[in-house]
Length: 108
Image (cartoon, rainbow, N blue to C red):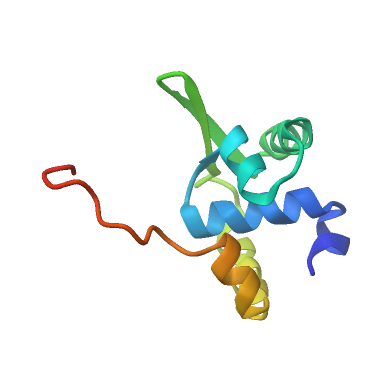
């Protein structure tokens, strides 16, 4: 849907997942969509170099999220949300549903 705008379907999927889940890591995004890890690495590096996303290391994992200082962040999130709203219901349920099982008792 936004592939022509972003120039790549992997970027589109990365952006959608970061919007829905707020952060993500390389292998998790790749496994979610069944796409090559190498493609996710390349596109996240490109987005990070452009200042759209930022990363931080948590333990052994590098987590990516939208850069809160990106000047067009609110407009970008609005565009992504409108695009997600018109996705087929089956795709939303397959890729973008939030956690459905309850957390373990006592876990924050």
